Image (cartoon, rainbow, N blue to C red; front, top):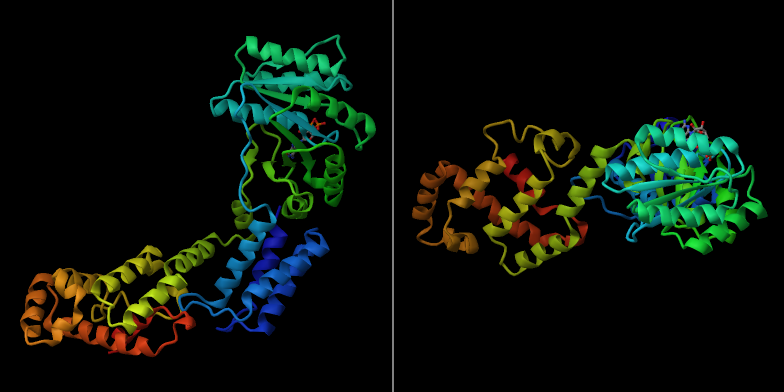
Length: 446
Ligand code: GDP
Protein backbone atom coordinates (compact mmCIF):
# COMPACT_ATOMS: atom_id res chain seq x y z
CA UNK A 1 0.00 0.00 0.00
CA UNK A 2 2.76 2.42 0.89
CA UNK A 3 4.90 1.43 -2.09
CA UNK A 4 4.74 4.77 -3.87
CA UNK A 5 5.12 6.82 -0.75
CA UNK A 6 8.07 4.73 0.35
CA UNK A 7 9.84 5.13 -2.99
CA UNK A 8 9.35 8.89 -3.03
CA UNK A 9 10.52 9.34 0.55
CA UNK A 10 13.54 7.19 -0.21
CA UNK A 11 14.47 9.45 -3.11
CA UNK A 12 14.07 12.59 -1.00
CA UNK A 13 16.56 11.36 1.57
CA UNK A 14 19.19 10.93 -1.10
CA UNK A 15 19.31 14.70 -1.48
CA UNK A 16 21.13 14.84 1.87
CA UNK A 17 24.60 14.05 0.65
CA UNK A 18 26.49 16.67 2.58
CA UNK A 19 27.87 15.98 5.99
CA UNK A 20 26.05 18.85 7.58
CA UNK A 21 22.47 19.76 8.22
CA UNK A 22 21.78 23.16 6.78
CA UNK A 23 18.57 25.09 6.50
CA UNK A 24 18.74 24.74 2.73
CA UNK A 25 19.32 21.02 2.38
CA UNK A 26 16.79 20.14 5.08
CA UNK A 27 14.18 22.37 3.44
CA UNK A 28 14.67 20.68 0.08
CA UNK A 29 14.36 17.18 1.55
CA UNK A 30 11.33 18.05 3.64
CA UNK A 31 9.62 19.73 0.70
CA UNK A 32 9.96 16.49 -1.27
CA UNK A 33 8.67 14.42 1.65
CA UNK A 34 5.73 16.81 1.99
CA UNK A 35 4.87 16.37 -1.69
CA UNK A 36 5.04 12.59 -1.32
CA UNK A 37 2.66 12.69 1.67
CA UNK A 38 0.17 14.92 -0.14
CA UNK A 39 0.27 12.55 -3.12
CA UNK A 40 -0.58 9.77 -0.68
CA UNK A 41 -3.74 11.56 0.32
CA UNK A 42 -2.47 12.99 3.58
CA UNK A 43 -4.34 16.14 4.53
CA UNK A 44 -2.55 19.32 3.45
CA UNK A 45 -2.64 21.05 6.83
CA UNK A 46 -1.26 18.01 8.57
CA UNK A 47 1.61 17.84 6.10
CA UNK A 48 2.50 21.50 6.75
CA UNK A 49 2.55 20.97 10.51
CA UNK A 50 4.51 17.75 10.10
CA UNK A 51 7.20 19.39 8.00
CA UNK A 52 7.43 22.39 10.33
CA UNK A 53 8.05 20.18 13.34
CA UNK A 54 10.84 18.21 11.67
CA UNK A 55 12.45 21.38 10.38
CA UNK A 56 12.44 22.92 13.83
CA UNK A 57 14.01 19.80 15.29
CA UNK A 58 16.66 19.49 12.58
CA UNK A 59 17.99 22.97 12.05
CA UNK A 60 20.82 23.88 14.31
CA UNK A 61 20.99 20.31 15.55
CA UNK A 62 24.51 19.09 15.88
CA UNK A 63 24.77 15.61 14.47
CA UNK A 64 26.40 13.04 16.72
CA UNK A 65 29.69 12.08 15.21
CA UNK A 66 28.54 8.48 14.80
CA UNK A 67 25.63 9.53 12.63
CA UNK A 68 25.25 11.33 9.38
CA UNK A 69 22.56 13.92 8.63
CA UNK A 70 20.59 11.54 6.45
CA UNK A 71 20.29 9.04 9.30
CA UNK A 72 19.27 11.75 11.70
CA UNK A 73 16.58 13.19 9.44
CA UNK A 74 15.23 9.69 8.76
CA UNK A 75 14.89 9.26 12.50
CA UNK A 76 13.12 12.61 12.90
CA UNK A 77 10.67 11.76 10.11
CA UNK A 78 10.08 8.37 11.69
CA UNK A 79 9.46 9.89 15.14
CA UNK A 80 6.95 12.37 13.75
CA UNK A 81 5.16 9.67 11.75
CA UNK A 82 4.83 7.55 14.87
CA UNK A 83 3.43 10.53 16.77
CA UNK A 84 1.05 11.38 13.95
CA UNK A 85 -0.33 7.86 14.01
CA UNK A 86 -1.04 7.98 17.71
CA UNK A 87 2.33 7.37 19.35
CA UNK A 88 1.82 4.00 20.90
CA UNK A 89 -0.44 1.01 20.54
CA UNK A 90 -3.58 1.07 22.63
CA UNK A 91 -4.98 -2.27 23.73
CA UNK A 92 -8.62 -3.27 23.92
CA UNK A 93 -10.13 -2.97 27.33
CA UNK A 94 -11.20 -6.53 28.14
CA UNK A 95 -11.24 -6.36 31.90
CA UNK A 96 -14.94 -7.11 32.44
CA UNK A 97 -16.58 -10.49 32.33
CA UNK A 98 -18.16 -10.48 29.87
CA UNK A 99 -16.49 -7.67 27.97
CA UNK A 100 -18.82 -6.32 25.31
CA UNK A 101 -17.38 -5.03 22.06
CA UNK A 102 -19.73 -3.01 19.90
CA UNK A 103 -18.79 -2.99 16.22
CA UNK A 104 -20.19 -0.19 14.09
CA UNK A 105 -19.57 1.53 10.79
CA UNK A 106 -20.96 2.06 7.31
CA UNK A 107 -22.34 -0.76 5.22
CA UNK A 108 -19.58 -2.56 3.37
CA UNK A 109 -16.83 -1.16 5.58
CA UNK A 110 -15.97 -4.67 6.75
CA UNK A 111 -17.86 -4.94 10.07
CA UNK A 112 -19.03 -8.52 9.72
CA UNK A 113 -15.66 -9.73 8.44
CA UNK A 114 -13.86 -7.87 11.21
CA UNK A 115 -16.21 -9.20 13.92
CA UNK A 116 -15.38 -12.76 12.96
CA UNK A 117 -11.67 -11.99 12.55
CA UNK A 118 -11.59 -10.41 16.00
CA UNK A 119 -13.41 -13.36 17.56
CA UNK A 120 -10.84 -15.71 16.03
CA UNK A 121 -7.98 -13.49 17.18
CA UNK A 122 -9.30 -13.40 20.76
CA UNK A 123 -10.10 -17.10 20.76
CA UNK A 124 -6.45 -17.81 19.93
CA UNK A 125 -5.51 -15.65 22.90
CA UNK A 126 -7.57 -17.88 25.21
CA UNK A 127 -10.84 -15.94 25.40
CA UNK A 128 -14.28 -17.44 24.83
CA UNK A 129 -16.00 -15.13 22.36
CA UNK A 130 -19.63 -15.00 21.34
CA UNK A 131 -20.66 -13.28 18.13
CA UNK A 132 -24.00 -11.50 18.06
CA UNK A 133 -25.81 -10.88 14.77
CA UNK A 134 -27.53 -7.56 15.40
CA UNK A 135 -27.97 -6.50 11.79
CA UNK A 136 -31.63 -7.26 11.40
CA UNK A 137 -32.16 -5.31 8.20
CA UNK A 138 -29.92 -7.19 5.81
CA UNK A 139 -31.23 -10.77 5.68
CA UNK A 140 -27.93 -12.12 4.40
CA UNK A 141 -26.00 -10.58 7.31
CA UNK A 142 -26.92 -13.35 9.80
CA UNK A 143 -26.02 -16.05 7.27
CA UNK A 144 -22.73 -14.33 6.47
CA UNK A 145 -21.77 -14.15 10.13
CA UNK A 146 -22.86 -17.76 10.69
CA UNK A 147 -20.86 -19.03 7.79
CA UNK A 148 -17.71 -17.16 8.86
CA UNK A 149 -18.10 -18.20 12.51
CA UNK A 150 -18.68 -21.87 11.64
CA UNK A 151 -15.26 -22.06 10.06
CA UNK A 152 -13.57 -20.93 13.26
CA UNK A 153 -15.87 -22.65 15.67
CA UNK A 154 -17.18 -19.55 17.42
CA UNK A 155 -20.87 -19.54 18.45
CA UNK A 156 -23.23 -16.93 17.00
CA UNK A 157 -26.24 -15.59 18.86
CA UNK A 158 -29.22 -14.46 16.78
CA UNK A 159 -33.02 -14.38 17.00
CA UNK A 160 -34.59 -15.40 13.73
CA UNK A 161 -38.00 -13.80 14.02
CA UNK A 162 -37.23 -10.93 16.31
CA UNK A 163 -36.16 -7.65 14.77
CA UNK A 164 -35.84 -5.78 18.05
CA UNK A 165 -32.13 -5.10 18.31
CA UNK A 166 -32.21 -4.30 22.03
CA UNK A 167 -33.94 -7.62 22.70
CA UNK A 168 -31.28 -9.47 20.74
CA UNK A 169 -28.44 -7.75 22.52
CA UNK A 170 -29.93 -8.19 26.01
CA UNK A 171 -30.68 -11.84 25.42
CA UNK A 172 -27.20 -12.44 24.06
CA UNK A 173 -25.75 -11.24 27.37
CA UNK A 174 -27.84 -13.77 29.32
CA UNK A 175 -26.88 -16.45 26.80
CA UNK A 176 -23.17 -15.64 27.18
CA UNK A 177 -23.39 -16.05 30.94
CA UNK A 178 -25.09 -19.42 30.60
CA UNK A 179 -22.52 -20.59 28.11
CA UNK A 180 -19.48 -19.17 29.90
CA UNK A 181 -18.55 -16.79 27.13
CA UNK A 182 -16.37 -13.92 28.36
CA UNK A 183 -16.33 -11.72 25.23
CA UNK A 184 -19.40 -10.57 23.34
CA UNK A 185 -18.84 -9.05 19.90
CA UNK A 186 -21.90 -7.30 18.53
CA UNK A 187 -22.04 -6.84 14.76
CA UNK A 188 -24.47 -3.98 14.19
CA UNK A 189 -26.25 -2.83 11.05
CA UNK A 190 -24.53 -0.36 8.76
CA UNK A 191 -26.04 2.03 6.28
CA UNK A 192 -24.80 3.65 3.13
CA UNK A 193 -24.25 6.93 4.92
CA UNK A 194 -24.40 7.94 8.53
CA UNK A 195 -27.98 8.94 9.27
CA UNK A 196 -30.23 9.61 12.26
CA UNK A 197 -31.71 6.14 12.21
CA UNK A 198 -28.39 4.37 12.39
CA UNK A 199 -27.07 6.68 15.08
CA UNK A 200 -30.23 6.37 17.17
CA UNK A 201 -30.09 2.59 17.09
CA UNK A 202 -26.43 2.39 18.02
CA UNK A 203 -26.82 5.00 20.74
CA UNK A 204 -29.64 2.98 22.26
CA UNK A 205 -27.63 -0.22 22.23
CA UNK A 206 -24.68 1.60 23.71
CA UNK A 207 -26.73 3.17 26.53
CA UNK A 208 -28.38 -0.13 27.27
CA UNK A 209 -25.34 -2.34 27.54
CA UNK A 210 -22.51 0.06 28.34
CA UNK A 211 -19.91 -1.68 26.16
CA UNK A 212 -16.27 -2.07 27.19
CA UNK A 213 -15.24 -1.12 23.68
CA UNK A 214 -17.00 0.63 20.83
CA UNK A 215 -15.03 0.24 17.63
CA UNK A 216 -15.71 2.20 14.47
CA UNK A 217 -14.78 0.33 11.30
CA UNK A 218 -13.25 2.47 8.57
CA UNK A 219 -12.83 1.37 4.99
CA UNK A 220 -9.43 2.83 4.12
CA UNK A 221 -10.18 2.51 0.39
CA UNK A 222 -12.57 5.46 0.47
CA UNK A 223 -9.85 7.93 1.40
CA UNK A 224 -10.73 11.23 3.04
CA UNK A 225 -14.46 10.33 3.09
CA UNK A 226 -13.60 7.71 5.66
CA UNK A 227 -12.27 10.43 7.93
CA UNK A 228 -15.40 12.53 7.42
CA UNK A 229 -17.68 9.62 8.32
CA UNK A 230 -15.68 8.96 11.49
CA UNK A 231 -16.00 12.66 12.43
CA UNK A 232 -19.78 12.58 11.90
CA UNK A 233 -20.14 9.40 13.89
CA UNK A 234 -18.20 10.85 16.78
CA UNK A 235 -20.61 13.76 17.04
CA UNK A 236 -23.19 11.40 18.50
CA UNK A 237 -21.36 8.50 20.02
CA UNK A 238 -18.14 8.16 21.86
CA UNK A 239 -15.91 5.52 20.39
CA UNK A 240 -12.89 3.87 21.95
CA UNK A 241 -11.02 3.05 18.82
CA UNK A 242 -10.87 2.76 15.08
CA UNK A 243 -10.33 -0.25 12.89
CA UNK A 244 -8.93 0.32 9.41
CA UNK A 245 -9.93 -2.31 6.88
CA UNK A 246 -8.78 -3.09 3.34
CA UNK A 247 -5.26 -1.89 3.91
CA UNK A 248 -4.15 -4.57 1.48
CA UNK A 249 -5.68 -2.68 -1.43
CA UNK A 250 -3.77 -0.24 -3.58
CA UNK A 251 -5.14 2.81 -1.79
CA UNK A 252 -2.65 5.51 -1.01
CA UNK A 253 -2.50 5.07 2.73
CA UNK A 254 -3.20 8.66 3.76
CA UNK A 255 -6.12 7.59 5.95
CA UNK A 256 -3.93 5.31 8.01
CA UNK A 257 -1.41 8.08 8.52
CA UNK A 258 -3.82 10.81 9.55
CA UNK A 259 -7.17 9.57 10.80
CA UNK A 260 -6.25 9.10 14.42
CA UNK A 261 -4.69 12.56 14.57
CA UNK A 262 -7.79 14.18 13.06
CA UNK A 263 -10.46 12.38 15.05
CA UNK A 264 -8.29 12.05 18.19
CA UNK A 265 -9.03 8.36 18.60
CA UNK A 266 -6.53 5.52 18.41
CA UNK A 267 -6.44 2.98 15.62
CA UNK A 268 -6.64 -0.33 17.48
CA UNK A 269 -6.64 -2.86 14.66
CA UNK A 270 -6.02 -3.07 10.97
CA UNK A 271 -7.36 -5.60 8.53
CA UNK A 272 -5.34 -6.33 5.45
CA UNK A 273 -7.09 -9.07 3.52
CA UNK A 274 -10.17 -11.20 3.31
CA UNK A 275 -8.80 -14.21 5.15
CA UNK A 276 -9.83 -14.83 8.75
CA UNK A 277 -6.34 -14.18 10.07
CA UNK A 278 -5.75 -10.95 8.10
CA UNK A 279 -5.97 -8.85 11.24
CA UNK A 280 -3.23 -7.07 13.17
CA UNK A 281 -3.02 -4.97 16.29
CA UNK A 282 -2.08 -1.48 15.14
CA UNK A 283 1.42 -0.42 16.20
CA UNK A 284 2.21 3.15 15.11
CA UNK A 285 5.95 2.42 15.22
CA UNK A 286 5.71 -0.66 13.03
CA UNK A 287 3.50 1.19 10.58
CA UNK A 288 6.02 4.05 10.38
CA UNK A 289 8.69 1.48 9.77
CA UNK A 290 6.65 0.00 6.96
CA UNK A 291 6.23 3.42 5.41
CA UNK A 292 9.89 4.35 5.60
CA UNK A 293 11.25 0.84 5.22
CA UNK A 294 14.43 1.79 7.05
CA UNK A 295 14.16 -0.22 10.23
CA UNK A 296 17.91 -0.82 10.39
CA UNK A 297 18.82 2.85 10.21
CA UNK A 298 16.17 3.81 12.76
CA UNK A 299 17.21 1.27 15.34
CA UNK A 300 20.85 2.18 14.76
CA UNK A 301 20.14 5.88 15.38
CA UNK A 302 18.12 5.01 18.47
CA UNK A 303 20.93 2.94 19.89
CA UNK A 304 23.55 5.58 19.15
CA UNK A 305 21.40 8.30 20.70
CA UNK A 306 20.77 6.13 23.72
CA UNK A 307 24.43 5.31 24.25
CA UNK A 308 25.78 8.77 23.52
CA UNK A 309 23.36 10.53 25.68
CA UNK A 310 24.20 14.21 26.14
CA UNK A 311 23.95 13.91 29.91
CA UNK A 312 26.50 11.11 29.97
CA UNK A 313 28.81 13.14 27.72
CA UNK A 314 28.56 16.10 30.11
CA UNK A 315 29.18 13.87 33.09
CA UNK A 316 32.33 12.48 31.50
CA UNK A 317 33.45 15.96 30.64
CA UNK A 318 33.00 17.00 34.24
CA UNK A 319 35.03 14.02 35.43
CA UNK A 320 37.82 14.84 33.02
CA UNK A 321 37.93 18.44 34.16
CA UNK A 322 38.36 17.21 37.70
CA UNK A 323 40.98 14.63 36.67
CA UNK A 324 38.60 11.91 37.76
CA UNK A 325 38.10 10.12 34.44
CA UNK A 326 39.56 6.67 34.92
CA UNK A 327 39.81 3.29 33.24
CA UNK A 328 36.45 2.19 34.63
CA UNK A 329 34.89 5.08 32.73
CA UNK A 330 36.76 4.13 29.59
CA UNK A 331 35.51 0.53 29.86
CA UNK A 332 31.98 1.85 30.30
CA UNK A 333 32.33 3.92 27.12
CA UNK A 334 33.65 0.94 25.18
CA UNK A 335 30.69 -1.13 26.34
CA UNK A 336 28.34 1.59 25.16
CA UNK A 337 29.84 1.45 21.70
CA UNK A 338 29.65 -2.34 21.74
CA UNK A 339 25.96 -2.20 22.64
CA UNK A 340 25.27 -0.36 19.42
CA UNK A 341 25.57 -3.70 17.73
CA UNK A 342 27.83 -5.67 15.56
CA UNK A 343 30.39 -2.99 14.88
CA UNK A 344 31.77 -4.70 11.82
CA UNK A 345 28.37 -4.66 10.19
CA UNK A 346 27.56 -1.10 10.98
CA UNK A 347 31.00 0.37 10.67
CA UNK A 348 30.35 1.61 7.14
CA UNK A 349 27.55 3.74 8.52
CA UNK A 350 29.84 5.56 10.94
CA UNK A 351 31.65 8.42 9.29
CA UNK A 352 34.08 8.99 12.16
CA UNK A 353 35.67 5.57 12.40
CA UNK A 354 38.33 4.13 10.15
CA UNK A 355 36.77 1.26 8.26
CA UNK A 356 39.85 -0.98 8.57
CA UNK A 357 39.96 -0.45 12.27
CA UNK A 358 38.83 -3.93 13.23
CA UNK A 359 40.39 -5.95 10.48
CA UNK A 360 43.94 -4.84 10.80
CA UNK A 361 45.94 -6.60 13.49
CA UNK A 362 48.17 -3.60 14.02
CA UNK A 363 45.27 -1.53 15.14
CA UNK A 364 44.06 -1.43 18.68
CA UNK A 365 40.72 -3.24 18.89
CA UNK A 366 38.19 -2.97 21.67
CA UNK A 367 39.18 -6.45 22.74
CA UNK A 368 42.83 -5.43 23.12
CA UNK A 369 41.95 -2.30 25.05
CA UNK A 370 39.59 -4.25 27.27
CA UNK A 371 42.10 -7.01 27.94
CA UNK A 372 44.66 -4.41 29.04
CA UNK A 373 42.22 -2.58 31.31
CA UNK A 374 40.89 -5.82 32.79
CA UNK A 375 44.43 -6.80 33.79
CA UNK A 376 44.80 -3.64 35.86
CA UNK A 377 44.11 -3.71 39.58
CA UNK A 378 41.09 -1.86 40.82
CA UNK A 379 43.43 0.80 42.26
CA UNK A 380 45.11 1.27 38.88
CA UNK A 381 41.77 1.54 37.09
CA UNK A 382 40.65 4.27 39.46
CA UNK A 383 44.00 6.09 39.54
CA UNK A 384 45.56 6.19 36.06
CA UNK A 385 48.31 8.52 37.30
CA UNK A 386 50.06 5.62 39.11
CA UNK A 387 51.48 4.53 35.77
CA UNK A 388 53.58 7.69 35.78
CA UNK A 389 55.02 7.05 39.23
CA UNK A 390 58.17 5.04 39.97
CA UNK A 391 56.13 1.81 40.10
CA UNK A 392 54.85 2.47 36.56
CA UNK A 393 57.25 0.19 34.70
CA UNK A 394 56.71 -2.83 36.92
CA UNK A 395 52.94 -2.28 36.74
CA UNK A 396 53.07 -2.19 32.94
CA UNK A 397 55.20 -5.38 32.88
CA UNK A 398 52.68 -7.14 35.10
CA UNK A 399 49.74 -6.02 32.94
CA UNK A 400 51.58 -7.11 29.81
CA UNK A 401 51.95 -10.62 31.20
CA UNK A 402 48.34 -10.71 32.41
CA UNK A 403 46.75 -9.40 29.23
CA UNK A 404 49.06 -11.01 26.70
CA UNK A 405 49.62 -7.58 25.10
CA UNK A 406 53.06 -6.13 24.46
CA UNK A 407 54.64 -3.49 26.68
CA UNK A 408 54.47 -1.09 23.71
CA UNK A 409 50.76 -1.59 23.28
CA UNK A 410 50.18 -0.82 26.94
CA UNK A 411 52.31 2.27 26.62
CA UNK A 412 50.35 3.35 23.57
CA UNK A 413 47.04 2.98 25.35
CA UNK A 414 48.24 4.91 28.41
CA UNK A 415 49.67 7.68 26.27
CA UNK A 416 46.43 8.04 24.36
CA UNK A 417 44.38 7.95 27.51
CA UNK A 418 46.48 10.79 28.80
CA UNK A 419 46.25 12.74 25.57
CA UNK A 420 42.53 12.21 25.47
CA UNK A 421 42.17 13.67 28.93
CA UNK A 422 44.18 16.71 27.90
CA UNK A 423 42.34 17.12 24.63
CA UNK A 424 38.86 16.73 26.03
CA UNK A 425 39.50 19.41 28.61
CA UNK A 426 39.63 21.79 25.68
CA UNK A 427 36.48 20.53 23.97
CA UNK A 428 33.22 22.25 24.53
CA UNK A 429 31.07 19.31 25.51
CA UNK A 430 28.03 20.85 23.88
CA UNK A 431 29.58 19.99 20.55
CA UNK A 432 28.32 16.53 21.41
CA UNK A 433 31.48 14.86 20.22
CA UNK A 434 31.72 11.28 21.20
CA UNK A 435 34.80 11.21 23.36
CA UNK A 436 35.49 7.57 22.79
CA UNK A 437 35.28 7.90 19.02
CA UNK A 438 37.88 10.61 19.09
CA UNK A 439 40.03 8.57 21.36
CA UNK A 440 39.87 5.51 19.14
CA UNK A 441 40.58 7.37 15.95
CA UNK A 442 43.62 9.01 17.60
CA UNK A 443 44.99 5.63 18.66
CA UNK A 444 44.73 4.39 15.12
CA UNK A 445 46.55 7.32 13.63
CA UNK A 446 49.64 6.59 15.70
P1 GDP B 1 -20.06 -4.94 6.40
O1 GDP B 1 -21.18 -4.61 5.48
O2 GDP B 1 -19.53 -3.71 7.05
O3 GDP B 1 -20.37 -6.00 7.38
O4 GDP B 1 -18.85 -5.44 5.48
P2 GDP B 1 -18.35 -6.92 5.17
O5 GDP B 1 -17.66 -7.50 6.34
O6 GDP B 1 -19.46 -7.70 4.58
O7 GDP B 1 -17.22 -6.61 4.08
C1 GDP B 1 -17.53 -6.04 2.83
C2 GDP B 1 -16.57 -6.63 1.79
O8 GDP B 1 -15.25 -6.20 2.08
C3 GDP B 1 -16.54 -8.15 1.78
O9 GDP B 1 -16.46 -8.59 0.46
C4 GDP B 1 -15.26 -8.48 2.54
O10 GDP B 1 -14.70 -9.70 2.14
C5 GDP B 1 -14.38 -7.33 2.15
N1 GDP B 1 -13.35 -7.03 3.15
C6 GDP B 1 -13.48 -6.80 4.47
N2 GDP B 1 -12.29 -6.53 5.04
C7 GDP B 1 -11.36 -6.58 4.05
C8 GDP B 1 -9.94 -6.38 3.99
O11 GDP B 1 -9.25 -6.07 4.96
N3 GDP B 1 -9.35 -6.51 2.77
C9 GDP B 1 -10.07 -6.84 1.65
N4 GDP B 1 -9.41 -6.94 0.52
N5 GDP B 1 -11.39 -7.01 1.68
C10 GDP B 1 -12.06 -6.89 2.85
